View (cartoon, rainbow, N blue to C red):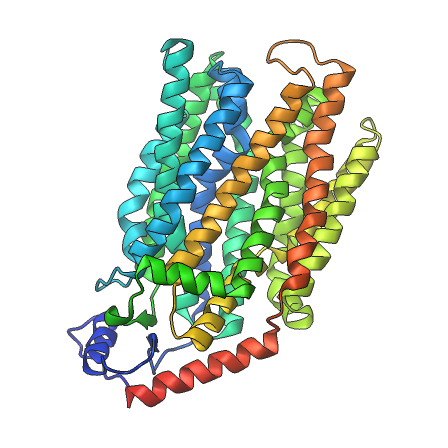
Length: 480
């Protein structure tokens, strides 16, 4: 058992043990006297995703609208910006994951990035929602540079944030609770953004929409900063990778490619998130120009998230009953049904639209499952291959989420543009049909496609429990 010197931090005690036992052929060590996570630490961890949404929901839900309506950038240029930034992400995120895996500090491998990255995330959130008068070409260049830097900062903060549950505990139920708290923080953040963004933009804009977006984004970003600092302070890494067993990027990628459960989980995440975030990016067009009820936009944007927030606390119990894979399958089916209800439904029947959004919100029950399956797959890879490329694995997941957001939004605005949409011009029935396809039918197709990788996932909960018990036994035996 690790004996803690009163003058040493928890992490320093663990690292001293690693120095003593540096020759063992194991990838990680778990603190032997690891205590169950408190409600407070789980709750505080969850608030980190609330803070993330104060930046990312602004981007995924309102950035396209800001670019086209407030900054005056053409829809085609916006779609191109989104895709180019994602190409860069495809290069940057795995590199970042590899760097994190080889980071060893008194605070752990992941937490320092949250501490030092959060201020820059705040800064570039504000700059991204700024529309300087640079002319048509200048606006496009400015939008591209600021959005690119914002995306980098988001990775620097959120790749380690998403990675933390896998190193905060070896207990499956605790990991599920951490990810449930994370998703609860996400849904509450989305509710707050959708409830307050447009009213605040109108209030602070004073008739100048661009000013309203800049001030609103600034307020949200500044609120997020102390929350990230609190997550850094209260989270603890108890699963530590030995410095000598840190994997070079090439070896980490080899282990990931060999890890079938991890690959199919990543594919599922990308496909399903294209549907989810792609819809978020253009949904406001549907409510503004097809339903035509501006006063109900906030209600529609919030409805499914409110339902998701209500069901999220029940997710760990449902996962224990059905397993992560089956919970995801139920979610995909519910969300497909909801999208088809809205697509074929009567846009003047507001109660029917509300019910459809409630059904869609029930699909949020699978929220923690993708990240939980990633942790399970990482443990499986460590058990089978002896390496733990968790930083790279979660970098791929964040990359997948950002690819999904960009591809979904780019596809959505591309389809709308294909049907003739031009900002400030009347919306014809043909354009309205294109918006309906983009916002509802395309996501439904993505959710159906998301079932394919789920069917290929073959890592049941019982097997994961056996793997974790064996890993803990290995670590305890080698730590004697």
